[in-house]
Each structure stands twice: as structure tokens, then as C-alpha cells.
Image (cartoon, rainbow, N blue to C red; front, top):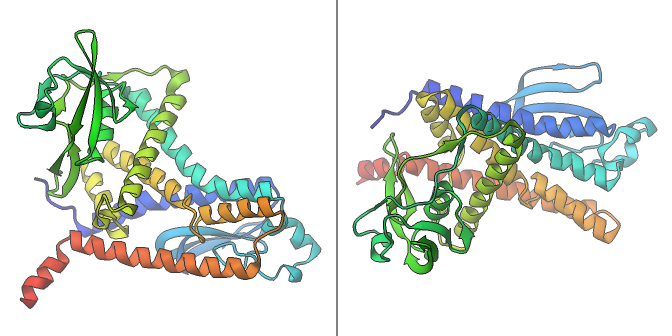
Length: 376
């Protein structure tokens, strides 16, 4: 088992992982806004008091805040960092021309959407580079070994069986089979397989396995109990790199959506939600394993950042997109009062979630258990 990385490395890795992702997210907003002629007053990485910054010739203040948990672009006409409209009547005709809130709804929609999409594009590019260098994981879904006493053994799955689908989802590779299983511990699924040119369907209740990583951290995962011969990485033609990487990112995003729904419906513990402290710890751990592992984590975090920002929560990009959808249907914007209350509620939700995940993180570090022993 590997030792935990030092605090300084955790902090450096956290900043090196999250900082570029936040910049790319906000730069996506900024670029599309400039394309549509929207002026930006502030481009900030981090919140709170400014550490350093400069003002460009267009009047945009580029700065770094002391709290590195996000960022924002404040456009002309915005009241605050969440892009809620200020008193638009006070704007001059020139400012109205450059104001985000006087642009057509489709332009505002694309400006807001550009942030999350930039994160997805970054992840696609990273995986495309990996596939160009190492090939894409395409291990055939053929059973080589069966773990004794496992759900596969109980269901009489045999060596040489080719698993065609599980739970109604096709499994053209062993990697897709594994990705389906690991987030569904204890579920009853239908396994469709081919055995000696005959198609069979078998009902299997997936097991639950507690896996420990190289740093001693435990994770609950689903278990079927089968393994392939060897992992296969196939070369990807240059013209197929982006489509292949895009499909891979879509599958990862779908997995995140399933895991989130499991938490919402109570099939997964809310204790599995991690916050900034957990992200920092994992970033430090991956940094000790090498550049490839660290960049892989950056790609996964980029998908997470894009996905989370698309959730329909006021303050997040998805909340703004929801308002624009309502505006498109009603043919008039949501009232400033309703938006203000929605933003307040969204901010309260985000802060509560931040506090909750921080408590979870501290618990995963064993803090509460050690305090309990001291008190006891």
C-alpha cells in the first residue's frame, strides 16, 4: 500500500488540476460572448479578494481570487458573478449594445452553454491523444476465468461465454461490461450471452465487493465475478480519434448520471459524495502515480465540471439555461424578482452541498472517528 502524498503536493496538484479546468470553462463563455459582441467587465479564476490581476485594452479585468473553488465572467449588465441582470435602465446606449441581457435568447443560450461544452471538449481531446498514443480499450467480452462462489459461478456462466449484453445494454467490449457492473451492486440483471453459437439469457444478481486502491481507500462496487484473458488496446485511425473519444466521454457521462440518480433514489449512500477536500486528496495521489494518471484524472474532473454545471440549479449554467427555456416558451423573460429568489435558493443549495460534502470528506479521512475515540 502506498503512503499518502504530502500536504504541499496535494495543494499543488489540486490547483494544477482545477485551475486550468475553471479557466477553460470560463474562457468558453468569454469566447462565445465576444463572438456575439458582449463586453466582459471581469474574468476571474477563484472567488473573493483579488490576489493578482490586470486590465486589458477592452476594459476587462483579468484576476485570480484567493478561493480557488470556481470562477466567473461578469458581463456588461450583470449585477453580480451569477450573471443575474442588474438595473438595465441605467445602461447607456453603447452599454446596451454590449450587454449580455439585451442579446437574443439563442445567443445568451449559446454563451452559457459554451462553458460546460468547453469542459467536455477538453476531455474529448485528452482521450483522443491517449487513444492515438496507446490505442482504445477494446477487450473482447469473452469470459476466461470465473471467481468461485461469485454471482457468475452461481448463474453457471462458463469459460468461453461471450457476453452480448447486460441489463439490456449491449457490451461490445469487456470494458463496457465492467463499467456497467461496477456502479450497480446488488442489482438483478439479465445477462445475454453466446455459448457454442447458441444465445442464452440468464438472470443474475450482482454481488457487492469492497475494493481497496493503492492508497488503502475502500470503494463499494458491483461484482459479476468474470475476467477476460488480457486487456486489448486497438489502434484508432486518425480520422476516428475524435468520434471514438466523444463516444467514450458520452459513456462516462452516462455513468455519472446513473450514479447520481442512484444517490437521489437512495440506492447509493450520500456518503459517497465527495467535495473539494476529496478532490484535492485524489489529485495529490494521482500526481504521485505519474503524468498519465494525473492527466486522466483531469479529463474525468473536466467531465464532472461540465456535467455538474448543466444541472438545472439556479446559479449554475444549467439554471440559466432553464430560465432561457422558460423564456422561449413564454415569449418573455422570467421576472427579476423570481430570478433573484431562484438565485438565492440555488446559492443556498450549493453552499449546503459544499458543507455536506466537506463533512463527508473529513469523515472519509477518519477525523470523526478519531475525535470519537478522544471523547470516548
